[in-house]
Image (cartoon, rainbow, N blue to C red; front, side, top):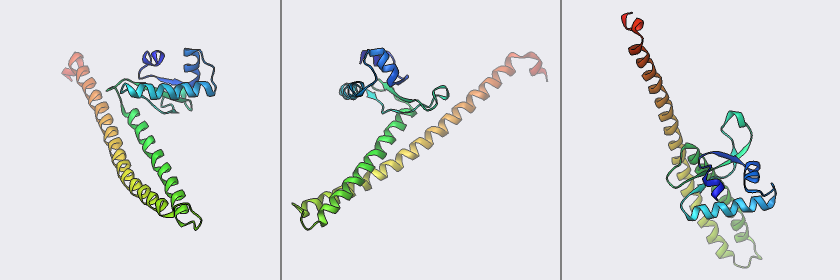
Length: 170
């Protein structure tokens, strides 16, 4: 965890983690990363899931990022939406399995499995609404980033006009 703490906000791959902590890339390293993820969440920090890198120089690389409590960004939001989509997929699988077992004449408790299927269905509806809100948040973040870039361009143009005497006389 100390190794991750020094790289807060940076993209790190399994190979970089392996060289940093001295564990070869293997199932042992993956288990250590899962353990580190649970440990940092106890302190309120976040170790993202491994996703494709957003850095053009690392195109296609699977990376994760560590964030200290209160230091997230739009890529952290992307990670949260990914977790939401995964949970919907897991709930859909739960609903299919429990609904099947509820209709099975040889089930150990068809009524209980029917209630589980209804609960999973209700949870899926709730989470689907949350995912829609997350998409709206991402669109708003992109709009804010575009507006901030445009404002920075305009400020640069204004500063060029005020520092260049030939532009002021034109």
